[in-house]
Image (cartoon, rainbow, N blue to C red; front, side, top):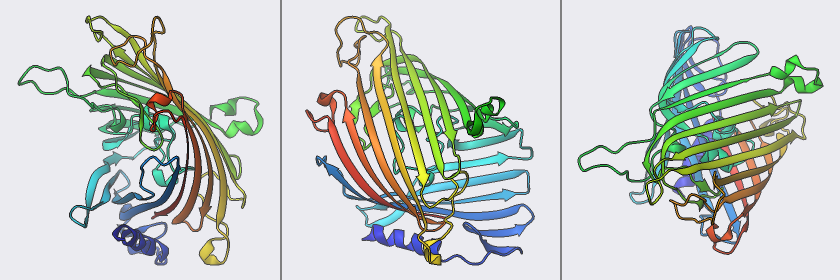
Length: 421
Protein backbone atom coordinates (compact mmCIF):
# COMPACT_ATOMS: atom_id res chain seq x y z
CA UNK A 1 0.00 0.00 0.00
CA UNK A 2 2.89 2.36 0.63
CA UNK A 3 3.95 1.90 -3.00
CA UNK A 4 0.46 2.82 -4.19
CA UNK A 5 0.46 5.93 -1.98
CA UNK A 6 3.79 7.09 -3.42
CA UNK A 7 2.46 6.76 -6.98
CA UNK A 8 -0.81 8.50 -6.06
CA UNK A 9 1.10 11.53 -4.78
CA UNK A 10 3.06 11.79 -8.02
CA UNK A 11 -0.12 11.27 -10.07
CA UNK A 12 -1.95 14.06 -8.23
CA UNK A 13 0.98 16.43 -8.70
CA UNK A 14 1.08 15.76 -12.40
CA UNK A 15 -2.69 15.97 -12.92
CA UNK A 16 -3.17 19.46 -11.43
CA UNK A 17 -0.82 21.91 -13.20
CA UNK A 18 -0.72 25.62 -12.55
CA UNK A 19 -1.27 27.89 -15.56
CA UNK A 20 1.97 28.84 -17.29
CA UNK A 21 3.25 32.39 -16.95
CA UNK A 22 5.59 34.45 -19.04
CA UNK A 23 7.05 36.26 -16.04
CA UNK A 24 9.70 35.19 -13.57
CA UNK A 25 8.73 32.91 -10.76
CA UNK A 26 6.77 29.67 -10.75
CA UNK A 27 5.79 28.31 -14.19
CA UNK A 28 4.21 25.00 -15.24
CA UNK A 29 4.15 24.00 -18.88
CA UNK A 30 5.02 20.29 -19.14
CA UNK A 31 6.56 20.30 -15.64
CA UNK A 32 6.95 22.72 -12.71
CA UNK A 33 9.80 25.23 -12.96
CA UNK A 34 11.28 28.28 -11.31
CA UNK A 35 12.41 30.97 -13.75
CA UNK A 36 14.87 33.51 -12.35
CA UNK A 37 15.60 35.41 -15.56
CA UNK A 38 16.57 34.96 -19.19
CA UNK A 39 18.06 31.47 -19.59
CA UNK A 40 18.28 30.87 -15.84
CA UNK A 41 15.80 28.28 -14.59
CA UNK A 42 15.29 25.13 -12.53
CA UNK A 43 12.75 22.45 -13.52
CA UNK A 44 11.46 19.62 -11.34
CA UNK A 45 11.22 16.25 -13.13
CA UNK A 46 9.48 13.15 -11.88
CA UNK A 47 8.16 9.80 -13.04
CA UNK A 48 6.50 6.73 -11.61
CA UNK A 49 5.73 3.47 -13.42
CA UNK A 50 3.32 1.12 -11.67
CA UNK A 51 2.76 -2.41 -13.06
CA UNK A 52 0.46 -5.41 -12.67
CA UNK A 53 1.96 -8.56 -14.24
CA UNK A 54 0.90 -12.14 -14.97
CA UNK A 55 2.89 -15.14 -16.25
CA UNK A 56 2.05 -18.45 -17.92
CA UNK A 57 3.61 -20.70 -16.79
CA UNK A 58 4.19 -19.07 -13.42
CA UNK A 59 7.90 -18.29 -12.93
CA UNK A 60 7.83 -16.91 -9.40
CA UNK A 61 7.78 -13.21 -10.27
CA UNK A 62 5.79 -10.57 -8.39
CA UNK A 63 2.42 -9.77 -9.93
CA UNK A 64 2.55 -6.17 -8.63
CA UNK A 65 5.57 -3.96 -8.96
CA UNK A 66 6.56 -0.31 -8.70
CA UNK A 67 8.81 -0.51 -11.76
CA UNK A 68 10.39 2.94 -11.50
CA UNK A 69 10.08 6.04 -9.35
CA UNK A 70 12.46 8.93 -10.00
CA UNK A 71 12.83 12.57 -9.08
CA UNK A 72 15.23 15.05 -10.59
CA UNK A 73 16.16 18.63 -11.36
CA UNK A 74 17.23 20.16 -14.67
CA UNK A 75 18.02 23.71 -15.62
CA UNK A 76 20.03 26.38 -17.36
CA UNK A 77 22.73 28.72 -16.11
CA UNK A 78 22.67 31.31 -18.91
CA UNK A 79 22.28 30.17 -22.51
CA UNK A 80 25.74 28.55 -22.40
CA UNK A 81 25.33 25.99 -19.62
CA UNK A 82 22.75 23.34 -18.83
CA UNK A 83 22.61 20.61 -16.19
CA UNK A 84 20.53 17.68 -14.97
CA UNK A 85 20.41 15.51 -11.85
CA UNK A 86 18.11 12.50 -11.48
CA UNK A 87 17.87 9.80 -8.83
CA UNK A 88 15.81 6.71 -8.10
CA UNK A 89 13.28 6.60 -5.25
CA UNK A 90 12.83 3.15 -3.70
CA UNK A 91 10.68 1.60 -1.00
CA UNK A 92 12.78 -0.01 1.74
CA UNK A 93 10.54 -2.89 2.87
CA UNK A 94 12.94 -3.86 5.66
CA UNK A 95 12.80 -0.42 7.35
CA UNK A 96 9.30 0.41 6.04
CA UNK A 97 10.27 3.76 4.51
CA UNK A 98 10.92 5.60 1.26
CA UNK A 99 14.56 6.38 0.50
CA UNK A 100 16.84 7.37 -2.36
CA UNK A 101 18.30 4.70 -4.64
CA UNK A 102 21.02 4.88 -7.30
CA UNK A 103 21.90 8.01 -9.26
CA UNK A 104 20.79 8.10 -12.90
CA UNK A 105 21.74 11.13 -15.02
CA UNK A 106 24.12 13.57 -13.32
CA UNK A 107 25.80 15.90 -15.79
CA UNK A 108 26.62 19.41 -16.93
CA UNK A 109 26.57 20.59 -20.53
CA UNK A 110 28.17 23.42 -22.52
CA UNK A 111 25.64 24.26 -25.24
CA UNK A 112 26.58 27.59 -26.77
CA UNK A 113 26.66 26.21 -30.32
CA UNK A 114 24.37 23.62 -31.90
CA UNK A 115 27.23 22.18 -33.95
CA UNK A 116 29.55 21.55 -30.99
CA UNK A 117 28.32 20.77 -27.51
CA UNK A 118 30.15 19.10 -24.63
CA UNK A 119 28.62 17.02 -21.83
CA UNK A 120 30.43 15.70 -18.77
CA UNK A 121 29.29 13.55 -15.87
CA UNK A 122 27.15 10.41 -15.75
CA UNK A 123 24.80 9.79 -18.67
CA UNK A 124 24.01 7.25 -21.38
CA UNK A 125 26.75 6.29 -23.79
CA UNK A 126 25.90 6.98 -27.48
CA UNK A 127 24.95 3.45 -28.53
CA UNK A 128 21.46 2.09 -29.09
CA UNK A 129 18.33 3.89 -30.32
CA UNK A 130 16.05 2.19 -27.81
CA UNK A 131 18.58 2.24 -24.95
CA UNK A 132 18.87 6.02 -25.34
CA UNK A 133 15.08 6.47 -25.22
CA UNK A 134 13.77 7.22 -21.71
CA UNK A 135 11.85 4.37 -20.08
CA UNK A 136 8.70 6.52 -19.86
CA UNK A 137 8.88 7.34 -23.61
CA UNK A 138 9.20 3.77 -24.93
CA UNK A 139 6.57 2.32 -27.27
CA UNK A 140 6.60 -0.88 -25.20
CA UNK A 141 6.76 -1.52 -21.47
CA UNK A 142 10.24 -3.05 -21.68
CA UNK A 143 13.27 -2.52 -23.83
CA UNK A 144 14.38 -5.44 -25.98
CA UNK A 145 16.83 -8.01 -24.63
CA UNK A 146 19.56 -6.66 -26.91
CA UNK A 147 19.13 -3.10 -25.62
CA UNK A 148 19.61 -4.38 -22.07
CA UNK A 149 22.33 -6.99 -22.70
CA UNK A 150 24.52 -5.52 -25.47
CA UNK A 151 23.99 -1.73 -25.46
CA UNK A 152 26.18 -0.27 -22.67
CA UNK A 153 23.81 2.12 -20.85
CA UNK A 154 25.04 4.85 -18.49
CA UNK A 155 28.62 5.61 -17.46
CA UNK A 156 30.85 8.45 -16.31
CA UNK A 157 32.59 10.31 -19.11
CA UNK A 158 32.92 13.27 -21.44
CA UNK A 159 31.16 13.50 -24.80
CA UNK A 160 31.15 15.97 -27.69
CA UNK A 161 28.05 16.07 -29.86
CA UNK A 162 26.23 18.32 -32.29
CA UNK A 163 23.88 18.89 -35.20
CA UNK A 164 25.59 19.32 -38.56
CA UNK A 165 22.45 19.63 -40.64
CA UNK A 166 22.07 16.34 -42.48
CA UNK A 167 23.41 14.33 -39.55
CA UNK A 168 24.13 14.38 -35.84
CA UNK A 169 27.28 13.08 -34.20
CA UNK A 170 28.22 11.92 -30.68
CA UNK A 171 31.70 10.87 -29.56
CA UNK A 172 32.86 10.25 -26.01
CA UNK A 173 35.42 8.69 -23.68
CA UNK A 174 34.09 6.86 -20.63
CA UNK A 175 35.51 5.53 -17.39
CA UNK A 176 34.18 1.97 -17.72
CA UNK A 177 31.84 0.36 -20.27
CA UNK A 178 28.36 1.21 -19.11
CA UNK A 179 26.12 -0.29 -16.44
CA UNK A 180 25.24 -3.24 -18.72
CA UNK A 181 28.87 -4.08 -19.41
CA UNK A 182 30.51 -3.65 -16.03
CA UNK A 183 32.79 -6.22 -14.40
CA UNK A 184 30.79 -8.95 -12.65
CA UNK A 185 33.30 -11.45 -11.31
CA UNK A 186 36.39 -11.44 -9.05
CA UNK A 187 39.55 -11.01 -11.11
CA UNK A 188 42.79 -12.95 -11.26
CA UNK A 189 44.96 -10.53 -9.25
CA UNK A 190 47.83 -10.92 -6.83
CA UNK A 191 47.31 -10.30 -3.14
CA UNK A 192 47.39 -6.57 -2.44
CA UNK A 193 46.60 -5.55 -6.02
CA UNK A 194 43.50 -3.56 -6.90
CA UNK A 195 40.76 -5.25 -8.87
CA UNK A 196 40.59 -4.14 -12.49
CA UNK A 197 37.34 -3.00 -14.07
CA UNK A 198 36.16 -3.02 -17.67
CA UNK A 199 37.29 0.09 -19.54
CA UNK A 200 38.14 2.75 -20.32
CA UNK A 201 35.94 2.82 -23.40
CA UNK A 202 35.32 4.96 -26.47
CA UNK A 203 31.88 5.31 -28.08
CA UNK A 204 30.84 7.00 -31.33
CA UNK A 205 27.46 7.35 -33.04
CA UNK A 206 26.42 9.13 -36.25
CA UNK A 207 22.76 9.45 -37.30
CA UNK A 208 20.74 11.51 -39.73
CA UNK A 209 18.25 11.72 -42.59
CA UNK A 210 20.73 10.61 -45.23
CA UNK A 211 17.95 9.09 -47.37
CA UNK A 212 16.93 12.62 -48.40
CA UNK A 213 19.65 12.36 -51.04
CA UNK A 214 17.84 9.43 -52.73
CA UNK A 215 14.57 9.20 -54.73
CA UNK A 216 12.76 6.99 -52.20
CA UNK A 217 9.51 8.92 -51.72
CA UNK A 218 8.24 9.30 -48.16
CA UNK A 219 11.18 7.23 -46.89
CA UNK A 220 13.32 10.33 -47.39
CA UNK A 221 12.26 11.44 -43.90
CA UNK A 222 13.65 8.30 -42.26
CA UNK A 223 16.68 8.48 -39.97
CA UNK A 224 19.62 6.08 -40.19
CA UNK A 225 22.47 5.65 -37.74
CA UNK A 226 25.59 3.62 -36.97
CA UNK A 227 27.46 3.27 -33.68
CA UNK A 228 30.67 1.71 -32.38
CA UNK A 229 32.30 1.14 -28.99
CA UNK A 230 35.61 -0.36 -27.88
CA UNK A 231 36.93 -1.09 -24.40
CA UNK A 232 39.46 -3.16 -22.44
CA UNK A 233 38.38 -6.39 -20.71
CA UNK A 234 40.27 -7.63 -17.64
CA UNK A 235 40.66 -11.36 -17.16
CA UNK A 236 37.73 -13.14 -15.55
CA UNK A 237 34.08 -14.07 -16.00
CA UNK A 238 33.41 -10.60 -17.39
CA UNK A 239 31.64 -11.25 -20.67
CA UNK A 240 28.20 -9.94 -21.52
CA UNK A 241 25.40 -12.39 -20.74
CA UNK A 242 22.01 -13.34 -22.17
CA UNK A 243 19.04 -12.30 -20.09
CA UNK A 244 15.36 -12.97 -20.85
CA UNK A 245 12.91 -10.05 -20.77
CA UNK A 246 11.85 -10.91 -17.21
CA UNK A 247 15.38 -11.18 -15.86
CA UNK A 248 16.28 -14.89 -15.91
CA UNK A 249 19.70 -15.66 -17.47
CA UNK A 250 19.69 -17.93 -20.52
CA UNK A 251 23.45 -17.56 -21.20
CA UNK A 252 25.92 -17.19 -18.34
CA UNK A 253 29.21 -15.24 -18.34
CA UNK A 254 32.26 -16.82 -19.97
CA UNK A 255 35.95 -16.14 -19.35
CA UNK A 256 37.31 -13.21 -21.37
CA UNK A 257 40.45 -11.11 -21.69
CA UNK A 258 41.39 -8.53 -24.32
CA UNK A 259 39.00 -6.23 -26.19
CA UNK A 260 35.24 -5.80 -26.30
CA UNK A 261 33.85 -4.17 -29.42
CA UNK A 262 30.26 -3.34 -30.34
CA UNK A 263 28.83 -2.39 -33.70
CA UNK A 264 25.27 -1.16 -34.15
CA UNK A 265 22.89 0.16 -36.82
CA UNK A 266 19.52 1.85 -36.35
CA UNK A 267 16.53 2.90 -38.48
CA UNK A 268 13.63 5.17 -37.49
CA UNK A 269 10.73 6.38 -39.64
CA UNK A 270 7.69 8.26 -38.30
CA UNK A 271 5.29 9.11 -41.15
CA UNK A 272 2.13 10.72 -39.76
CA UNK A 273 0.48 8.63 -37.02
CA UNK A 274 2.72 5.59 -37.63
CA UNK A 275 6.29 4.59 -36.91
CA UNK A 276 8.73 1.89 -37.94
CA UNK A 277 11.89 1.28 -35.90
CA UNK A 278 14.62 -1.31 -36.25
CA UNK A 279 18.03 -1.97 -34.74
CA UNK A 280 20.85 -4.46 -35.16
CA UNK A 281 23.81 -4.77 -32.81
CA UNK A 282 26.70 -7.14 -32.28
CA UNK A 283 29.34 -7.51 -29.58
CA UNK A 284 32.71 -9.30 -29.93
CA UNK A 285 34.80 -10.13 -26.88
CA UNK A 286 38.30 -11.56 -27.00
CA UNK A 287 39.23 -14.59 -24.88
CA UNK A 288 43.02 -14.39 -24.97
CA UNK A 289 44.80 -17.12 -22.97
CA UNK A 290 41.49 -18.38 -21.53
CA UNK A 291 41.63 -22.08 -22.37
CA UNK A 292 42.52 -24.65 -19.68
CA UNK A 293 45.98 -24.76 -21.30
CA UNK A 294 46.40 -20.97 -21.42
CA UNK A 295 45.78 -20.81 -25.19
CA UNK A 296 43.60 -18.25 -26.95
CA UNK A 297 39.93 -19.06 -27.48
CA UNK A 298 37.72 -17.82 -30.31
CA UNK A 299 35.77 -14.58 -29.78
CA UNK A 300 32.56 -14.62 -27.78
CA UNK A 301 29.79 -13.08 -29.90
CA UNK A 302 26.48 -11.54 -28.93
CA UNK A 303 23.97 -10.47 -31.57
CA UNK A 304 20.57 -8.82 -31.36
CA UNK A 305 17.99 -7.19 -33.59
CA UNK A 306 14.37 -6.09 -33.55
CA UNK A 307 11.70 -4.61 -35.84
CA UNK A 308 8.81 -2.62 -34.36
CA UNK A 309 5.80 -0.75 -35.68
CA UNK A 310 3.18 1.54 -34.11
CA UNK A 311 -0.03 3.27 -35.26
CA UNK A 312 -2.10 5.97 -33.56
CA UNK A 313 -5.64 4.96 -34.46
CA UNK A 314 -6.83 8.33 -33.12
CA UNK A 315 -4.66 10.18 -35.66
CA UNK A 316 -2.00 11.91 -33.55
CA UNK A 317 1.35 12.51 -35.24
CA UNK A 318 4.08 10.18 -33.98
CA UNK A 319 7.02 12.52 -34.61
CA UNK A 320 7.94 14.52 -31.50
CA UNK A 321 6.26 14.78 -28.10
CA UNK A 322 2.82 13.20 -28.56
CA UNK A 323 -0.11 15.06 -27.01
CA UNK A 324 -3.69 13.77 -27.31
CA UNK A 325 -5.93 15.74 -29.64
CA UNK A 326 -8.81 15.09 -27.24
CA UNK A 327 -7.42 14.59 -23.71
CA UNK A 328 -9.42 12.40 -21.35
CA UNK A 329 -9.75 15.19 -18.76
CA UNK A 330 -11.00 17.49 -21.53
CA UNK A 331 -13.95 15.26 -22.38
CA UNK A 332 -12.21 13.20 -25.09
CA UNK A 333 -10.92 9.64 -25.27
CA UNK A 334 -7.20 10.46 -25.27
CA UNK A 335 -4.78 9.00 -27.82
CA UNK A 336 -4.84 5.26 -28.57
CA UNK A 337 -1.85 3.54 -30.17
CA UNK A 338 -1.36 -0.05 -31.33
CA UNK A 339 2.15 -1.54 -31.33
CA UNK A 340 3.91 -4.78 -32.31
CA UNK A 341 7.56 -5.86 -32.07
CA UNK A 342 9.63 -8.94 -32.90
CA UNK A 343 13.11 -9.34 -31.44
CA UNK A 344 16.08 -11.69 -31.23
CA UNK A 345 19.00 -11.94 -28.80
CA UNK A 346 21.61 -14.70 -29.05
CA UNK A 347 25.11 -15.61 -27.89
CA UNK A 348 27.65 -18.00 -29.41
CA UNK A 349 31.37 -18.52 -29.98
CA UNK A 350 33.10 -17.64 -33.24
CA UNK A 351 34.40 -21.20 -33.43
CA UNK A 352 31.99 -23.97 -34.43
CA UNK A 353 34.64 -26.72 -34.68
CA UNK A 354 34.43 -29.84 -32.57
CA UNK A 355 31.95 -30.63 -29.83
CA UNK A 356 30.11 -27.71 -28.24
CA UNK A 357 30.06 -27.31 -24.43
CA UNK A 358 28.51 -24.90 -21.95
CA UNK A 359 31.75 -24.74 -19.95
CA UNK A 360 32.86 -21.04 -19.73
CA UNK A 361 36.32 -22.05 -21.02
CA UNK A 362 35.05 -24.01 -24.03
CA UNK A 363 36.23 -22.80 -27.45
CA UNK A 364 32.98 -23.94 -29.06
CA UNK A 365 30.12 -22.69 -26.90
CA UNK A 366 26.66 -24.22 -27.13
CA UNK A 367 24.65 -21.34 -28.63
CA UNK A 368 21.47 -20.06 -27.10
CA UNK A 369 18.97 -17.37 -28.04
CA UNK A 370 15.77 -15.68 -26.97
CA UNK A 371 13.07 -14.64 -29.46
CA UNK A 372 10.01 -12.64 -28.46
CA UNK A 373 6.83 -11.14 -29.86
CA UNK A 374 5.35 -8.14 -28.01
CA UNK A 375 1.84 -6.87 -28.72
CA UNK A 376 0.84 -3.59 -27.12
CA UNK A 377 -1.89 -0.99 -26.69
CA UNK A 378 -0.95 2.47 -25.40
CA UNK A 379 -3.62 4.80 -24.06
CA UNK A 380 -2.31 8.36 -23.59
CA UNK A 381 -4.85 10.08 -21.38
CA UNK A 382 -2.99 13.40 -21.00
CA UNK A 383 0.46 14.86 -21.55
CA UNK A 384 1.46 13.48 -18.13
CA UNK A 385 -0.27 10.10 -17.95
CA UNK A 386 -0.35 6.95 -20.06
CA UNK A 387 -1.67 3.40 -19.62
CA UNK A 388 0.17 0.56 -21.39
CA UNK A 389 -0.97 -3.03 -21.91
CA UNK A 390 1.52 -5.59 -23.31
CA UNK A 391 1.29 -9.30 -24.14
CA UNK A 392 4.64 -11.03 -24.67
CA UNK A 393 5.41 -14.44 -26.19
CA UNK A 394 9.02 -15.43 -25.45
CA UNK A 395 10.85 -18.55 -26.69
CA UNK A 396 14.26 -19.80 -25.46
CA UNK A 397 16.25 -21.92 -27.96
CA UNK A 398 17.87 -24.23 -25.37
CA UNK A 399 15.18 -25.17 -22.85
CA UNK A 400 17.80 -26.62 -20.48
CA UNK A 401 18.85 -23.01 -19.80
CA UNK A 402 15.34 -21.53 -19.70
CA UNK A 403 13.76 -20.04 -16.53
CA UNK A 404 11.94 -23.37 -16.05
CA UNK A 405 14.09 -26.28 -17.21
CA UNK A 406 12.39 -28.14 -20.05
CA UNK A 407 9.95 -25.31 -20.85
CA UNK A 408 11.03 -23.20 -23.82
CA UNK A 409 8.02 -20.89 -24.35
CA UNK A 410 6.42 -18.37 -21.99
CA UNK A 411 3.50 -15.95 -22.11
CA UNK A 412 3.45 -12.85 -19.96
CA UNK A 413 1.14 -9.87 -19.74
CA UNK A 414 1.18 -6.56 -17.95
CA UNK A 415 -0.74 -3.35 -17.46
CA UNK A 416 1.30 -0.29 -16.56
CA UNK A 417 0.42 3.22 -15.42
CA UNK A 418 2.99 5.86 -16.46
CA UNK A 419 3.02 9.20 -14.65
CA UNK A 420 5.64 11.63 -15.99
CA UNK A 421 6.20 15.36 -15.52
